Length: 193
Ligand code: MN
Image (tube, rainbow, N blue to C red; front, side):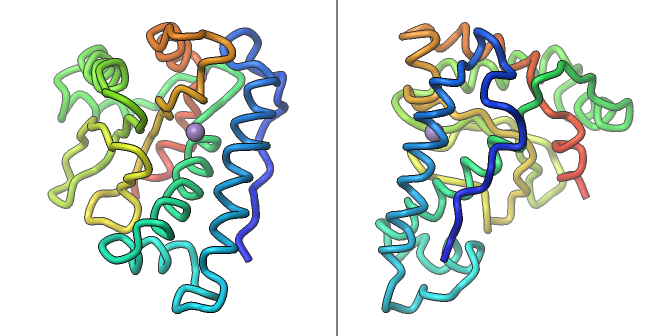
């Protein structure tokens, strides 16, 4: 059985950026719902008893219902880990990778912000490391995920409306702007193996 992970922070730790009410819905209703429906969807078939990685890899091209639920469970769990109540500074080692592939940290931030701001409809902005080892900012639609692909997931921002509508209404830009003060760079850096 898959389980909803606890949030790795207090729900009221982010002030006006993302309220406890948003976490109540986003984690307690949306993410919890994906987990509950995933458990029901794998009962009695080839996916029962498999790890989340195995379910994502095995369902991607063959079972959209199972894939969407499994991928959303992965994406949300990863997203919570990317968040820090306190503002953090990325390490020099990580910034040098960003500089190498984006030219500067500011250009990386602008590109990721642009991906998140211009993504049409529901989805996710991701920083991934490509199979060739290059860091890339790119959007993924709906439940699509870099998990179990040749790309290594490093950082994500949920840009589904449920992520920001309670606190920012239609102002996705304000949600993205505040995100930069709440990135858990220590977690992101651990993903670069
Ligand atoms: Mn979400």
